Length: 131
Image (cartoon, rainbow, N blue to C red; front, side, top):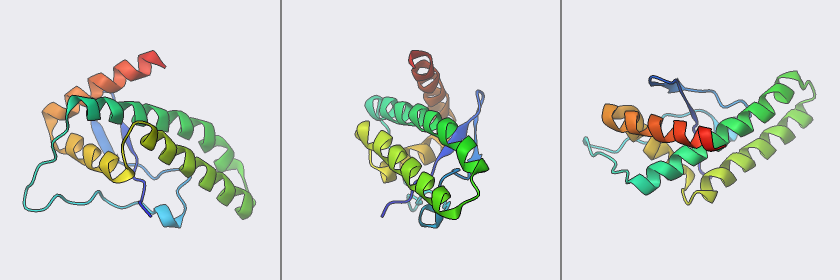
């Protein structure tokens, strides 16, 4: 099963890996797969737009689930909420025509390339305004 790695963007720059609020052990936080021997991931405009849409949707889902998860005491209820949230995040990524792995690779590329990061931030901000 693919692991979902989700990141947070600050207005000026990408910052480190977030601990996804409803990630059970199966979705444990891991760094994105390395591309090996300096190979750079190519991200076209269509993929960058899809990434931005999935990223914005993830934050909406996180905002919806984070408060209840932090207040739930029953482990079974918490696990159910985590599964539900993870399912919605995966669906949001796939709705944009991306796999979880490709989403993570795009994010790694955005994080590693200053020019691509600026472009991604611009597209993400445009998507935020639309929603």
